[in-house]
Image (cartoon, rainbow, N blue to C red; front, side):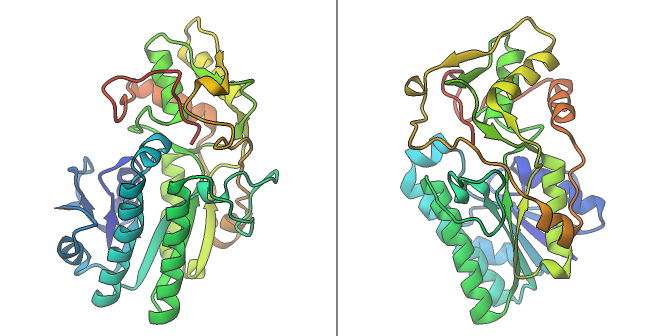
Length: 318
């Protein structure tokens, strides 16, 4: 099987590409950046360029659509760009798949679509309550894919990722930012009392979820929560990072009002129920949070992100 991975040069895309290659699949990548993964075919270009997209899709059997604008600060600052890339880019991919007779699309969505779910663990049936432009674009993309399935019959699966992290992720996101701070000898910063709750999924486990959604016929027409269902508070996460660093640091607390996250935007509890993915896909996360954090420190570097330097009081719990 030959698979096109959109955004395959990125953090999750690289992990997915490597996972596919290890399992004997051919991989082609469309991305504006050169993928670091050896053994993949690269087409340089944007998913907004319909000609490039048609070229990239041609000759493939399936598409894994990861390319998107992401990051709370970036997507809120560039709302129109986010809408254009995340929605029109998705439409371009689906249209090309229909024209070229692609057998299946796997769409990467996000736990952001649930907003503040109001339940201890989020199932795929939990009401969608988007609180950001980014989350809205993911919901619209899901709906477009379902509509094209009904009209043209193309098979699809949707995976909603919950806080994926790992080597190569930029410090625009909370866990790598905590690690980056510790590497620089700075205290990880949490908002308020730090009791916001998340669960974190290592990149290889996320790649496993994508692969299973692609290759398991029972996945067709289904949505899956892909994550690790072990919750941790932000304060607890910062403490784990400090312990793994071996440095004499303390968790730093700042008021929510002093951060770039308002209380109306903040999500206080979001943990996935992954029982559907376990049952249908035999999905099984392999990397614990403690082990994943150690992997980041063993790697020894975390990219600062989309800015030349980062203000550690401006972190993101996305």
